[in-house]
Length: 116
Length: 109
Image (cartoon, rainbow over all chains, first blue to last red; front, side, top):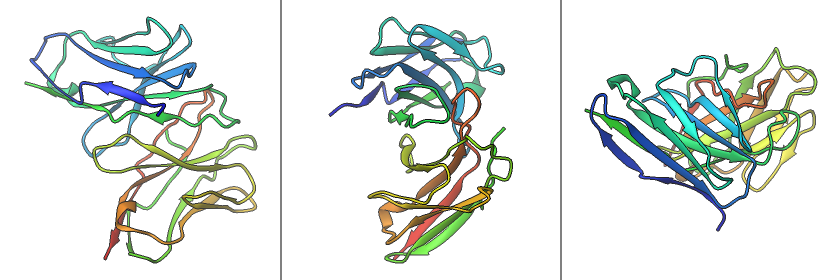
């Protein structure tokens, strides 16, 4: 089945130690998103790629970076994780961006990051 | 900021209809209303979306008021597996989903 895959499902890192989370999709969608969801909060968009075009949300810290080497894969890099970065990180895809048309976002299961 | 407001929680008896309200009084004419749900420890899942007309699919029905300032998601026969946080979302200008706090629906036996 076509899907959005996130690895690993659980990631533990140390304070200040760089960590990379990965997302892959078999849907061949143009857009890939990264969301951060802290405990008992709603998902918050960090950034997205439309093909190779990167779009950063204004309030996303510089500590968070992303790479999309090809259509199928997208990575979230946290350069120096702090205790406040502990969260669920969700990857999503969609065919397009336009708000007025049918562009359902398909979410992966998420990676739960723990920072020690 | 999210353009919607929802009650923080609701209960529903198993087998009964669950009616989840949402206010979106600042919605513009070409903005769609989307509903997603998130079961504990999973990624959000698309349910349904609509613009003006009422919509129905295999999961739910969406009733949108004529002035489009509010809508109601209806799960016709709620099951225990429908226990989740339900998000009503009006998409932003960039097409991004801006999640509000959602409604935590608890379906009880």
